Image: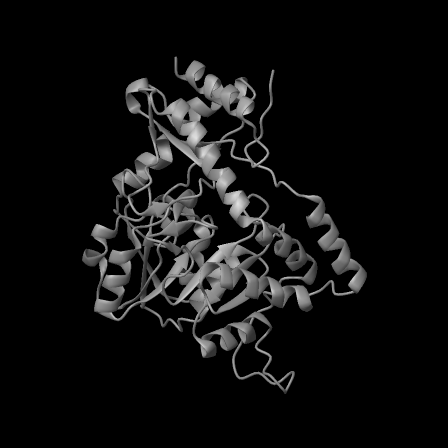
Amino acid sequence: MISIPVNEPLLTEADFASVMGALRSGWISGSGPDIEAFEQRWAEYCGRKHGIAVANGSLAIHLAIALLDLQPGDEVILPSFTIISCIWPIILASATPVLVDSDPRTWTMDVHKLKQRITPRTKAIMPVHIYGNPVDMQPVVDIAEQHGLQIVEDAAEAHGAEYRGRKIGSFGDASCFSFYANKLITTGEGGMVLVDDDELAERARRFRNLGFQPGRRFVHAELGFNFRLTNLQAALGLTQVDRIDEIVLRKRAMGKMYTERLSQLDGLELQVEQSGSRGVYWMYGLLVRETTGLDAAELARRLAQRGIETRPFFLGMHEQPVLRERGLFADESYPVTERLARQGLYLPSSLSLDEAQIDCICAAVREALA
C-alpha cells in the first residue's frame, strides 16, 4: 500500500549551507546579521517597509494585536473559519472578538457581511487568507477607511499570493506571516510582522525584546515579550526567500493538477480562486457533498485505508468548547463555516509530491467516493 503524508518541508543544499554558516559564525540566538537580512528581504518582497521577525506565526498575530492598544470591550472582527491563533490574542487583550461567516466558494471571510458587524466599539478587522486563497481585500480596505478601523492581515498561509497585482501581506496597518515547517517558506518555527510605519516598527521591536529601549538596557517604559527568532532560523529563511517564486510556481502547478483531476467528480466541491486573485494552494482542500452520504471524517478514514494522509478543516471559532466555556458566541451560528468544518479536508500538499503521486491520490479519492 502506498503511504503519502500530508506535508513535509523540502530543504535544499543551500538551506543546509546557510544554517551551517550561521552556526560557524557563532550567531545562534535572538540576535545576528541573518535576522535583519531576513526581515528586510521578506518585507521588500511583500512590498512593505519593515519586518519584525518573531518565534512563530501565532506570536506574530499576538504582537500585531498588542500594537493596537485594545481596551476592554473594544471589538475586532474576524472570520469564524480560522485557527484559534487568530482569536486568542484578542481575548488576552480583554477585547471582544466579533465573527463573520465565510464565502461558500472561496472559503475566506465574507466581506459583504462586514458592515453589519461594525459597532461603535469596533477597532480593527482581521482578514485571513485561508489555505493561501486571498480575501477580497478592496471592500475590507474601503470599509476600514470609512469607519476609521485598523487592519491586521493574517497572511500566515499565503506566502507569494497576490490580489489585484499586490502581494498578500502588503495591506493594512500590519500583516502577519508564519514560517512553520509546512509553510511555503519555513524556518522550522518562526513568524514575522510587516508594517510600513517607522514608529510602529520600532515599538514592535521593543515589544519583541522584553520592552528594552534603545540606548538604555533594563529600563522599561512598556511591558514587552520575549518573542525573538534565532539567527539560525533566519539563516534558513533567507535561502527560502531566494526561491519563493519557484516555490509559488510549483504550488500553483500542483493545484492545477489536482483541480484538473478532481473538478469533474460530482461528489466534490473545490475552493474557487476569485477574479483578480492569485492563490498559492498552501494546502489543497476539498468539500465532500452531502449527497454522497459522507462527511469529511468518513472520507478521511477511507483515504487512510488507501495510504493517503489528510487533515480536517478548522472547526469554527463559534463552536470551540474553550470559547463557549468563556461565554462567547452563545446562540451564534455560521452555516458556511459549519459546513466547511464538517465536509472539508485537505489532501497531501508537500512540495516534494510529483505528478504520479498526485495521480495516485486522486485515484484514491475517486475510489473512496464510489
